[in-house]
Length: 442
Image 1: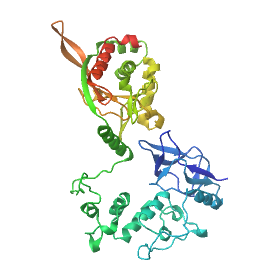
Image 2: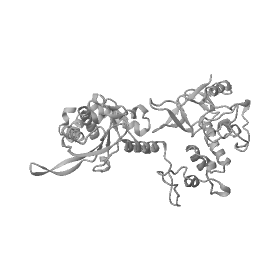
Image 3: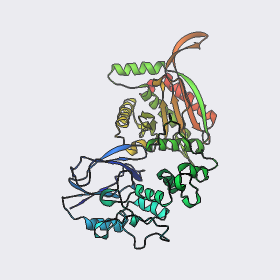
Image 4: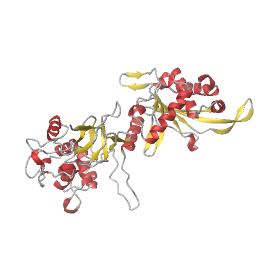
């Protein structure tokens, strides 16, 4: 019996996944729990294993497609197995689009005429996104020859048809489709009146008054498209700065006792980092100053009686912020263990979406990069983030005498809509006090 391969839901917040690569070709043998395809969520690229052994009979969603979770993307079965009934069932449910009763074309001139698909049995397969693009551009997709598996019409096929229909470059066609524009209203400057990317911008369709003009690349310049993760980071940082009133307070703290604590714990076989100590200290401070652990919603302010402490971790393609759930319930030793586990998962790409969702506060440490202090941007919908600088021997005045102390600068960025400057200052003072006597928090 055939097995449906579905787009897996890799977290409570995940709604769709982007297929980046099929690791097995259609018609090849697959083994259960062996890698089948690679997918990209909003922040992670992960490998998904096959749910069954057999033959990959049909790839429904090609690489490059974005598919809603739980939607069927492929079928596995026995060699030669008839899956026409299953495909028809999927088509009826909308997971695989078939030829419509009435093609969407108002006139012969408005319809792209290319070689008709030779799909057996009258069945015509098209990906959901390709069908959407066809409808947006008044393309009769039943006349397209698909380049996907077994003639599957993909989004790229539709965009190519749009480009040919109105003499448009593929890049310009993609922009026109994404922005819901009309190519008929744009004059082309290319050969034979072909619409170029710059024409879309020059027409004022893409480059609105607040958008940058089309960029012209010099010989020694390179465009690096936003990856899934980089794009999400960009959007969230802009959302953070535009959606909150961010302010910043800083304080220098003496790390002498924290260093002593770390040394003594190491002597007993317990390894903790300065970040682990800070997590324990900041968690305690958040319990005393809950507005720093809150968030703003349309109805008001949400105060949380739990602390999900986020750790900013640098990865090759950007930044991930896994969080320690219910950090207020953990000892320093347990925090160290959980932190190490999350960091390892982040670096090897095995982090689940739940492990980087629903954070309430974040710590970002750049001390290991020899940074004295910096201003971090809040990770929405949180209301605060603590930037941690390096520990450095510094001359300080104590009782009118100059002494050398291991000092560190803490930089608190907070949402001024719910946290006033005085409250933020008290929060930092409380952290400073706890770091002077961290033994109470073991």
